[in-house]
Length: 308
Length: 210
Image 1 (cartoon, rainbow over the protein chains, first blue to last red):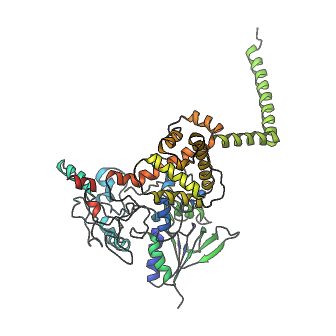
Image 2 (cartoon, chains in turn green, cyan; image 1 turned 180 degrees about the vertical axis):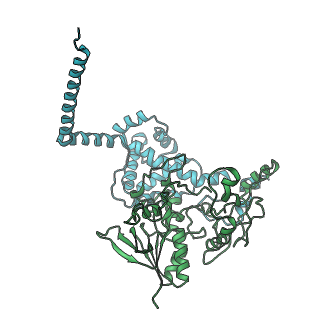
Image 3 (cartoon, each protein chain N blue to C red; image 1 turned 30 degrees about the vertical axis):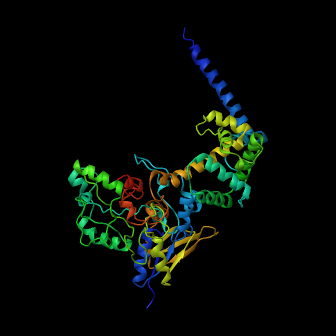
C-alpha cells in the first residue's frame, strides 16, 4: 500500500494546523514556506523589540510583496498585518479569538447588507471548539451576554480584567454598557506542552510560547519524522491533472535558478488571503485560463481582512 | 469674398511650431538621459540628499570603549534626572553598537564631541563634569527644531543632529518604556514577567495611598 502524501503551501496558522492534522492521520507532509526560519519560542525577537527597540528586518515582510495596492475604504495597510516567515502572520499577533455571531452569517436576510453565508453558525460551531482546543484558548462567557452558544467550554479559564479595565467596567456598567473579558489563545495555565502565561505585558511577540504561535505545532509535527519543512522556497504554480485535480506543485528555492516539481496526493493552499489567491491565479492553464477555482470570475475580488 | 479664414493658417503654423519644439525637447531629453551630464546631476542630488539626511553611515558594528560608555551613561543621567536602572541603558548602547551598522561609530563620535565641549568648558571629560556643566552642554538639544533649521544644521553640524536623533531621542524613548512606568507607580515595566495576580491589583502607589 502506497504512503499517503500531502503538500501544504504556507506554514502559518492554517497550514500548520492542517499539516498537524494530516500527519496524525498517517500522511507524510511537506510544508513549503517562502520566508525564512523564525526562532521559537520567540525570545530573540521579543528581546530585540522590548529591550533594544529594534525591529529586525529578517522578521518583517520581505520587500518583494511590499507596497500592495488596495482600494475601497479599508483603513489599514495590509503591509502592517502580513508576515512571510515560518509560522506566518500568527508569529506576531494579539491572539484574540472571538467567534462570529450567528447573525453574522445572515446579514442580508437580517439587515439587508452584504450576503448571507451558505452555512450557518451551527455548522461551524464544532470547528470553533476544535480550533480553540488546538490553540489553547483561555476565556469565559460568564461575563459576556453577547456570547454565541457553545457546545464545549473553553479549554482554559479566562484572564480576568486588569485593574484599570475593572475600574472602567464598573463605571460603564452603571451606564448599562458591558465590558467583558476576551477569549485569547494565551495559556492561563500550562497547556499542551506550553507554559502558563507569565504576563510579560505584551502579547504581540511572546518570549515563552504562552501566546499561541503556529511554530509550536509545526515543531511537534516535524518531530514525528513525517513532516518536512522547506523554508525560503516559493511555490510558483499548482499543476492540475486531466481530471481537474491538483497533482503537484512547481517549487523553487528563493536562491535557486530553476524550479522543481513536487507531487502529492493532497495539495493544500494555505498561504494567506493574498498569496493564496495569487497562486491560484498564477496556476492558470488551458482548461482554466482565469486560474484555478475562478469559474465565476470572483477570485481575488471582494477581499476583506478579518475584522475582529 | 471667400478667402479662407486667417485663423486657420495661423493655427496650422502654430501647430507645426509646437511639433518642432516638442521634437527638439524630446531629442534633448533623450540625449540628457543617455549622457554623462545626467549621471553627474544624479550624483549631485545624491550627495545633497546625504548631506541633509542624518542617516547613519553603515559602518561595521563593534564593541564600545569604556570611555564612550561612561559618556553615554552621563548623558542618560543628565537627561533623565531621576533614579534609573542603568543596566537597561548600558545593555541598550552595547547591543546597538554591537549589532546595528553605524551605531558604534555614532556613539564614539558623539562621545568625542561631548568630551571636547566639556574640556573647553571645564577642562574635564563630559562624564567627570558636574551636572551644571553637562546641562549647559546639552542645552543645545532641541527636539522640536523646525525642518528648515534641521536641514541647515545638517550642513554644518551633522553630528549634533545625529546625536539628538539617535542618542537623545532613543534614551528618552527607552526611559518612557522602562523606568517611566516605575516612576508612575508600577512595580515593573512591560517586557518583564509580572505574574497573573498583580495586574488585577491597583498600582503600588495607589495601594500605599489607600
